[in-house]
Image 1 (cartoon, one colour):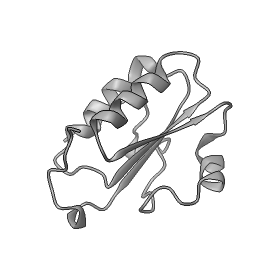
Image 2 (cartoon, one colour):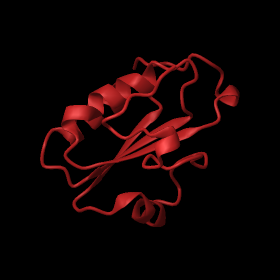
Image 3 (tube, rainbow, N blue to C red):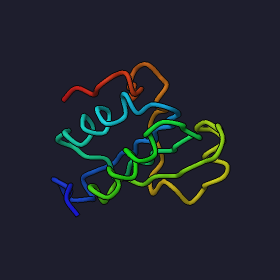
Image 4 (cartoon, one colour):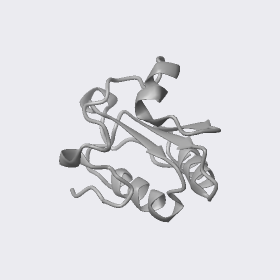
Length: 114
């Protein structure tokens, strides 16, 4: 498995949660952008919200490559709020900000800058 952490886990203090439906066009770039950061997340959870394109396969490939990425596949849309209600054990740390809040957008159409 590649994608080993660049810093000690005690130094990393954030989690990224991405809800994605039919986002194959943007998801790989979003993952690559986050993976290229100096400070990697403790965990990134990609919720595949019933995608009909290659979103699930892209997310699974990223999870194979990076130990800190986990994928939840859902048959229907549920969004981030519904995800938290159904999966209380994940993530390992509390999210700082939802992906749809503009200040820290991890919206698949935006890349994170270093």
